[in-house]
Image (cartoon, rainbow over all chains, first blue to last red):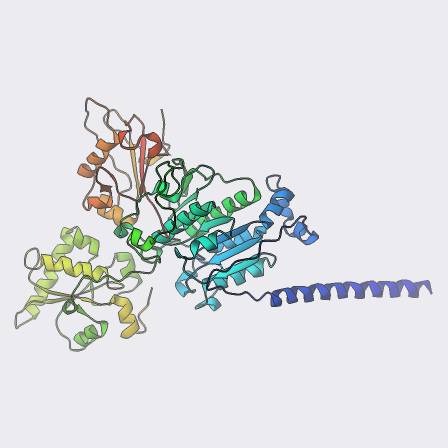
Length: 459
Length: 115
């Protein structure tokens, strides 16, 4: 009799555990289904973040390893849950930043990006997957973040930050992180942070280098204090031209997450008046003491001249994107299309195809019959390269029985450097070089890949 | 006296031990300094101490290959270059008027914008 009772009790307990497990599974599933993320294409007012007064048992378990740190503790964790952070740019910096902030239990994440996911993003923008290609980066990042921590509120914005929407947006957040990829946006974000009194955790990365500073924070400088005038556009290199090793923005984005967490939890940032430089090649960090807030600064100084947001593309003389800008240096008769060049090849007309890209890009892909002399070698008049060019032009002239100027077609990746090279070669023609007829192939090898040979790689 | 612990970048010059470091994007440093990050130079002796203004002129005359506009504008560096003297923003040190001292470490950094 008593055996039957204990057996039944054991069975009952077993069933109760099963029910609890099923209920838990159901609630998780319901939570993920009801929270369909709404992609914002404009800035709208958000409801205030609800303040948490105590940690739930689930919170305690989830954050237990960081709760054990006296630097953070329960108070710091609660502070994190009350903080909203706007991430401007969901790329190489924004992805790891969003990931660690969500994992750590930040209250609300605004995820802003005007762009869509492309295959060439995936080596560094680690929240996006192959299946997200073509999707808005903001949405892709928000979905990834939600899988990681569904208690974090995500607001994806698929829009370009502009002087019209920046203030309304930034005013709704406690901390702003600049993860953008261009100069006008960096000035825009900084000015908007000064005008709304928000700390700006800013990082950047290119090739094998990274930089990080917290602007507009506890008497430290704003971006304009440090850089009152924008750099000349021709001195700025972007990631799609200069390249970047994925882990470099990864490291810098993680650093941003660290500083955001320190500010949000109440510990304070170490980079208010410091610049962190990371040299990935030598694996060296340098920390540099910066100037304080400048009394003469145009936006955060004593008598500011910038009291509202301005036209930052005009101010910087460049567009608020890292996409390659098309140059128009040549007239129409100085340019041919990739298809025109295909016809010249088909007709077997004698000519020289000059590829002016750097060697590292020629190694990626090139047309087999091209001669490679980088634009920089032409600009510097490197003697061995000029000699080579003279020889090839001489050979061509001998091939051309009827005389006339040997035709030289110049190609590069997208058709910008090739135009500069045409201008240069025209100057050299008849003096440093035999007379030649120079034209560039409009749109470069990428146009060749798109319009003539789809098997040619694009990068 | 400040020492920059940079090993291979250290070199001696006329009475001063100075270190120059150029952190530029590769194209600019290729055009400006033949892609070389550090330079071994000898500053000529003069009766007054060298200041940063004179140093920039000297770099322009002796180190720059071409396109000086990628490095200087007027008598200072072009916008977008941060100058450090002994690991501190040169604004804290008097900028162009700073007088160079033995073992000083001068770094030129071009700002990055990518992300």
